[in-house]
Amino acid sequence: MNKYWWKALSILLILYSLIAGLLAPVPTLPIINETIRILYYHLPMWFTMFTLYFISVVYSVRYLASGKTEHDLIAVESVNVGILFCFLGLGSGMIWGNYSWGDPWPNDPKLNGSAIATLMYLAYLVLRNALEEEQKRGKISAIYNLFAFPVMIVLMYILPKTTDSLHPGSGGNTGFGEFDMDGAMRAVLYPASLGWILMGLWLAQIRYRIRKLQIRID
Amino acid sequence: MMKKLATLLLLILINQLNVLAQSSNAVEMATGLRSSGKIYVVVLVIVLLFVGVTAYLISIDRKLNKLEKRK
Image (tube, rainbow over all chains, first blue to last red; front, side, top):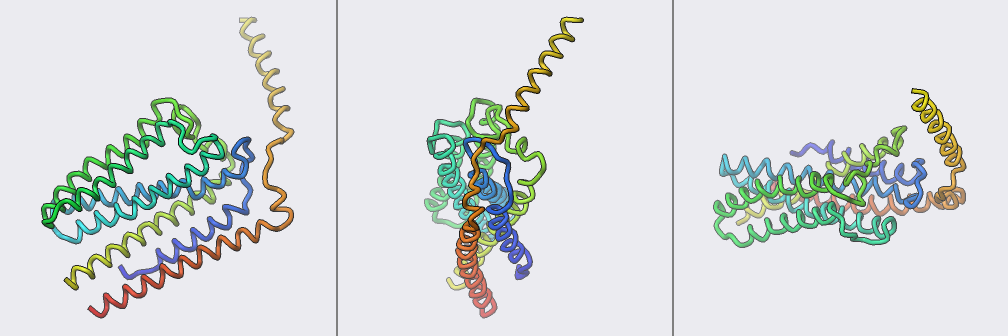
């Protein structure tokens, strides 16, 4: 994929979100005040992680069907970059939570769920490391991925909605959608999300290309 | 029936009080940084950092392109 329009778009969208995210007006809410702008950067991290994990599980399935190394490589490199965005999401959330909730990690179902999901995907990488033979590694990790993905969805997006939570959008709290009545925040959030998703895809693509070159050299 | 009407009217009136109370916007925002123009310095720094990292990313991408063409 030597087309670069989507990479340029990614840069432009993120640049826009960095500038507009700081300069454009935001709803004035007590307690969080200006930190509501963190939403523009925290949320896209999760969208990107989710997109990458989704791509990974799709290519895991394709690998099981085809046995082609390329599919396995895409699966693993998507997870690698997805984990990066997962940590960025956790980190940015912890900073935000520290100042809004007074605690970077209150015992909250969404945070605990995302921590467990992170461990699951790290375990995916450990599993791959433990298996030497290429086809075996690809197949077993693909099957693991098929389980990890839906469990991640349940842990991060379904369970938190069913119980008490501090996190917006979970535990009966309104999501930020309620405060953004005039769509002013959406005007920055949507381009930012798309920009970061494209950036995540770009990073995964680079890792994948490096892997392919390594194989060619060996 | 009259009781329900009276309760409804009472609730609406009380609600009006609530709305009045919110109109005196007491939520502090960082207007100081904005009015002094310093927010633009912050934006400039952040943009610079991003441009720097992005330039590095582009250079990696270009190097990869060259390697792929060679092989």
